[in-house]
Length: 408
Ligand SMILES: Cc1cc2nc3c(=O)[nH]c(=O)nc-3n(C[C@H](O)[C@H](O)[C@H](O)COP(=O)(O)OP(=O)(O)OC[C@H]3O[C@@H](n4cnc5c(N)ncnc54)[C@H](O)[C@@H]3O)c2cc1C
Image (cartoon, rainbow, N blue to C red; front, side, top):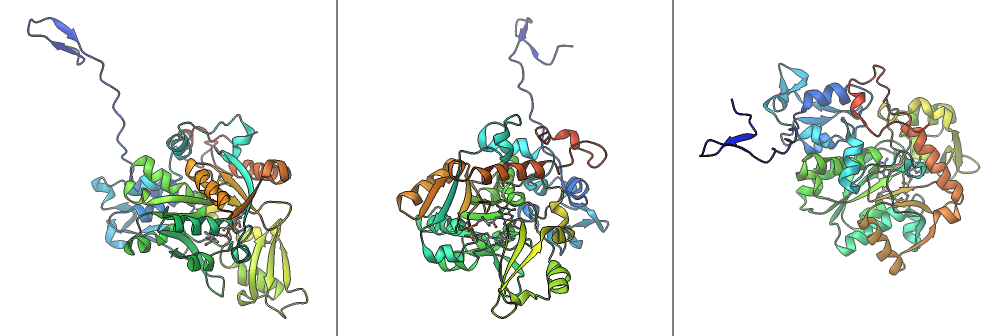
């Protein structure tokens, strides 16, 4: 019998044809894989990417920041077996920024190479520049958590037409977060500042689209900012391609909502409604309404907060939001500046335009605050070490994650 790569010519002579290119393996992972490997383990961060990508609307978000398969989507009532998954729908797994070889795949997609694990600098992911930046607008600075850069970038991008909406986090007077859409300067500023409980901003995607948005910015921690490029890489392009700007927030953890009652109120007598601003700088800092205490201020040691760490954060390896266009944090020796990692050409272009228009002030972070940059790298290395990569039984597919060995 002829070898499959050999065709017979009319004259009966065997003729070698060009070798067939290797077939790309078809992506076949579906909800059952996602459920087994991610959702029912500690790996799921609750980013909500799978819910947004689900074309059948059978995934919902539960109060524990997990996706759940709704009863009408189940086979035999099983939360692990999706009717559509078993008929070959794979959209949820294509969107998950933690499934299998997510990190090198997204790296390749964004930068054409994987992060250099031998380069200590790239423990924070691939980047172009590290800056300290702040808005020159006094009102925006006042509203912002650090240098108000995130809000300034969103407002600039709305003005310039890079985006027509942004997925942000709103908060009520009781510090309950709510993912939402910002379309105007006023809405961006209303959402400014940081909450240290989770807000799955991607969930607001459907509202933005329903309202006609075509070019959308996402603001979110690393767990969320890896979702759009993952969607694009693995072919969940419908939601992925609408995310036109990806702003990441540096993050080592977020807290469960009961931290308010069970720690801040129980131990310090401060209720949700007493708090006007919060920050984390080596401790949880709370600014309070007039008259709550003498200083209108309270500090809570972080070691008391650890018991309230959201489960999905304990294994998250990404402190520095490594797959965003721009990643922003509050590390720094002096307050009022945003530590800014510029990663993509788009991130660079937006920042250059803002500098040219005098919308922002910037300094090289490496020159002006090397300690902050050093601390960022240490925190990034610490987070990387949380990822279960050792194959000692925590994850069945641990060996499928090249490039994720924590630095020594
Ligand atoms: C949970 C969390 C943990 C963080 N941990 C660190 C850290 O360990 N080290 C560090 O350097 N920086 C950390 N940051 C980032 C920091 O708090 C600031 O968000 C960042 O410096 C940008 O400041 P800004 O003044 O430029 O942003 P702003 O102009 O104030 O804009 C902040 C944006 O973040 C959005 N946002 C607020 N809270 C949330 C939330 N819970 N989830 C999603 N989006 C939200 C707002 O809607 C707004 O669009 C963390 C942020 C969050 C939300």
